[in-house]
Image (tube, rainbow, N blue to C red):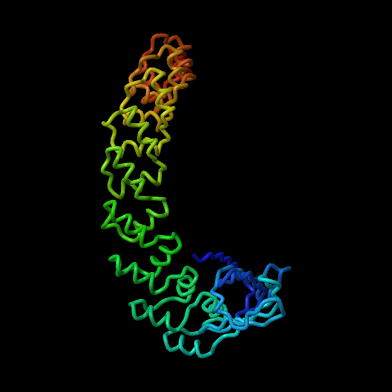
Length: 375
């Protein structure tokens, strides 16, 4: 597994020549953990015009020539795009020093022949760092990938989109995978095993973009199996929505316990989206609404109906209202203050339906007083 940390901050006032910087390294068996940092030539820290780059990565020890321990040394990493020359000191397995990049004009000629011109030293340096070689570019073209931007080449190198990985993706039936899709597969660690596991749970026709979304949101065979065990044959879209909104096996079990087998996956998803918890349902039951349907309770939650609101209405004489009536009251802003206001004008026996109509038409204590004044 290659561990990569890349941070590139590029602002104005940069130059493409004289790429150099500092390095630290740690040798671990046949691997070299190399950290490189560069503040580009011409930087002006006081004015804010600067370019800063750093990278840490594992490399095979054999990629370096002249690497020795316990002494002052110079060693090199020679790649098609150019050579990175290192100087410094190793004490034991740890080293530090300076580096400088030297471009390879033969590689530039190759790139010119393949349609690239005016390639900056910065890109050549990236290509050397991340293994973008003549053979790699030729391979990409032979696999049908042409007109590749320099930025795409850099990302392909950073995320190790190699020939073997592309072949694995093609062999799984994705022959038309774009370079951007391949990069995303690597970024989100979508492996051959993961894609095959998605196919095994019935998602054989899922596109690469869909599979990437599955991985981003943590879709797993065990999650799909848990939904099936709960009695639901959810399709790919339903499973993805459930995962996006954080629906787990416990939530499904709680909803089925309270609503029985009549509740659908779509209803469960809506309830989770609107924040309906088992605790909310129990409180609503204790407030006099034990037999609400999933759709009724969802509407009530959407419109902000709480056990406290129900109690406030009951304290004012409006208890045992239907779910539909209490929802209409909340929608139209019939709150305790409004009810007290209307009752204070002498309408002691006003009904819930009358209050709703009065609120809809803007009838309040001020309006009532004005009418009385006209009389």
